[in-house]
Length: 65
Image (cartoon, rainbow, N blue to C red; front, side, top):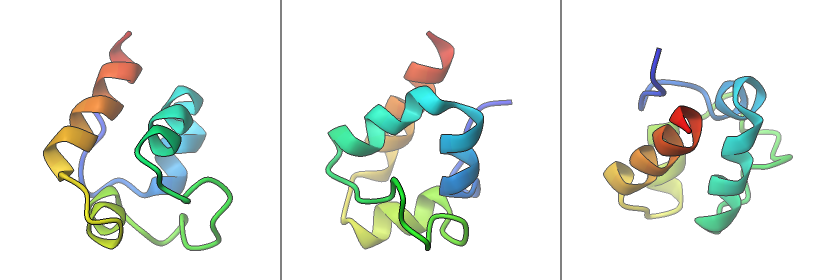
């Protein structure tokens, strides 16, 4: 199942550890953040003012490779 905007950040990083590099590359402080277990990918993109489509595409690319 591909990563979606409704997935929790913590779950994404836990289920696919390679995605941690994507969070770091996009300058997101989600790694180790206590809010990561409550925020969805969409929430995190909003908090960090990211292009959500580009971020989701990067996450999916690393998972598929």
